[in-house]
Length: 333
Image (cartoon, rainbow, N blue to C red; front, side, top):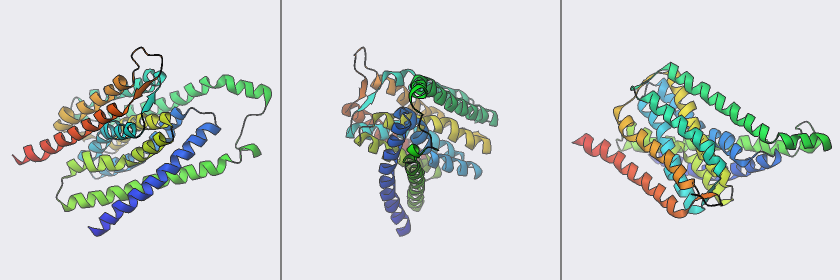
């Protein structure tokens, strides 16, 4: 128990430190390549910080433990919206651009609807998994291509005037250490989160907590700590697009990539409680992002303010209380 407690403390310290450096590196990379921070937030920060979820769910699938595999993925989605965006908005209100509502959040809503449809029959097959993984690959390709087209005029102007920056040019040399440390910091994020989750799970097992509740709470929160640390650090630095893009990208990757890989490894039966309790909460929170981010006819961009952050956080606390009540109290009865 002492070793597990030390793992939690050390993992948390390393997580916060590496997240701060990682957000700095991501923002500098976006600035250098003239890439919108939202794209970096979705692809680099969002997908990259979902590596712990991918690892945990894949290992759980190999060990034939669908409770942790699916609970981790969908529980992380709930945590990302309610807990992470709630805390982030409390620290600094998050600006939500209308193009984000029309594109990225719309895609996330459609993907969430696909997940509900696949789960409805109580089974996830390898065909379902292949659909999810193919859709993930197509989504990444579409996002990159759309951003490339959006910046094509700037690229053409560069060709007419000066030579565009290249990693092979001497002018591009400063980006190399930035990319190097970006990868190192991402690796530290993943490692520190794994150390922290290991310690938390060991402590939970010491108190006799079941694997299902671990998957939906401790593991879901633990594997979402990179997203929490990155979003909070981004919000403190005024990088709203990174903070929001991080959550959107992470939820997309959890729903498509994490679940897809786990089910490719081992097809799964879906527990009734997941369909009746956790999936509806995930859907409601995803739709809530539209309501909170919409500007309702105002000329300025929408914002998730501190009051709305409190509401998201209260929703997460209420969900956790519901989870504990349905798992322990009803179970004991």
